Image 1: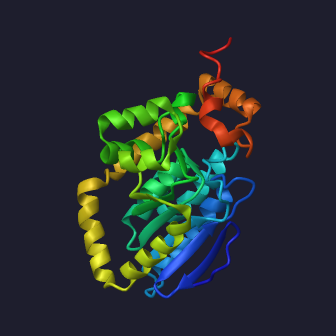
Image 2 (image 1 turned 90 degrees about the horizontal axis):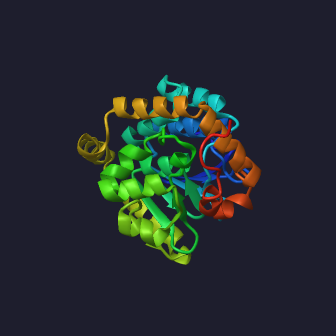
Image 3 (image 1 turned 90 degrees about the vertical axis):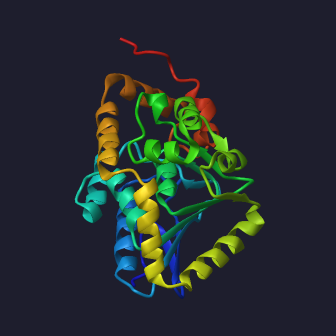
Amino acid sequence: MALSFETLDVHQEGAVVFADISSPPMNLLGPELVRDIVSLIQQAESDDTIQVLVFRSADREYFIAHVDLNRVAEYRQEAAKLTGEASIASLFRRISTSRLVTIAQIEGRVRAAGSEFILACDMRFAARESAIFAQFEPAFGQVPGAGGVQHLTRLLGRGRALEVLLSANDYDADLAERYGWINRALPAKELGDFVRALAHRIGAFPAAAHSAVKERVNAIALAPIEDFRHDSDLFASAVRTPEAQQRIRAAFELGLQTREGEMQLGELLAKLPQGLTR
């Protein structure tokens, strides 16, 4: 497979491909990153020697910050190149149903669509010292549009899913592990070796078993595509409302989509104005 991408540094080790996300200044999910994820999935699925994809970040403070709120229409069109639908919800669900085993090795912040991306992966392992998780869309009056509601409710249970979603707050790796958001939190110095060993162990087993096991687990645990489409439609309509646009503008003024401002995004969101100013 070709290993040249704009926002991914990719290398192959036998049956395992490691993809390091590198989209400065803070790994926002924009059209370039979506385009590269689509291309990587397409190329990896067409290569029978590849069984496992490991996603990591070249930025130790940000895994995937969230979507680029200035380029929503553009990244939705890039997602359509894999699924035929202009929706990252469909793209992420397609990752869950891929024959490939996908693992997220998380260091740094992973919020909103970033969280939904790692939830779409088959397994999630995070650095105890640095990983931060959030599903902050409700702070702007929106429903998470790329699978967050579907995955978190199944993984965390109703009460904890409502806590995470309605608080729109940051959660560290230890609490994310306790809640079931991730498989394990590990010390950063151990994380890479653990994930590499697991990926190669899985990659050494028969590929047919990977597909069969994923199909059966997905039949039980993965929401129907119609539910993902519904959430995507809700997000797309809500993001255009006057209240959402006002709150997004206020967040930009406070530092949204800047490295410094998003280091403490949970605190920033608590400062947003209440209600709609007329």
